Image 1 (cartoon, protein in one colour):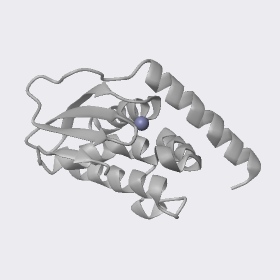
Image 2 (cartoon, helix red, strand yellow):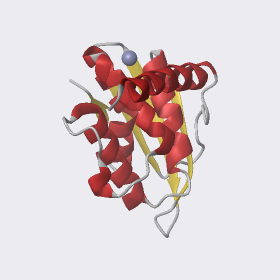
Image 3 (spheres, protein in one colour):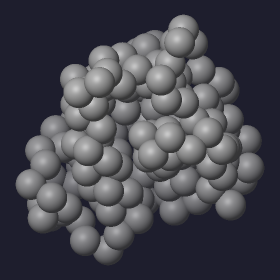
Image 4 (cartoon, helix red, strand yellow):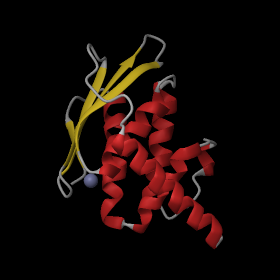
Length: 157
Ligand code: ZN
């Protein structure tokens, strides 16, 4: 990655995090969610609850989240809800894998999955702050847990 690309990514990261943290999309409780999960990141104090409505064709019809957390965790959850609405649960699981690889793996480009992550790529800006990576992945772990219908809380620790 060239310096220019890295700088652009950093700007995009900052912009996206601020934007979504200030005005989170799909914030609130989803009445009669078919799938839900709670995510807790004790290191930072992030506590989010995610709700999904998955129809009989395994398509995610709606997604919402509530709770409190730092800007990164809230922004990541907000972007997650925007991303997964309209996807099948298996596509959503692919995004979970791609995002966690992007944020925690050594491979900078999870192209193997064939997913176009679009703006979500900017989340990798968090890799410069290793202690905050779990803030960014929290909601995605919640998504994965909800899709697999375990109603247990997920914790990053
Ligand atoms: Zn956090």
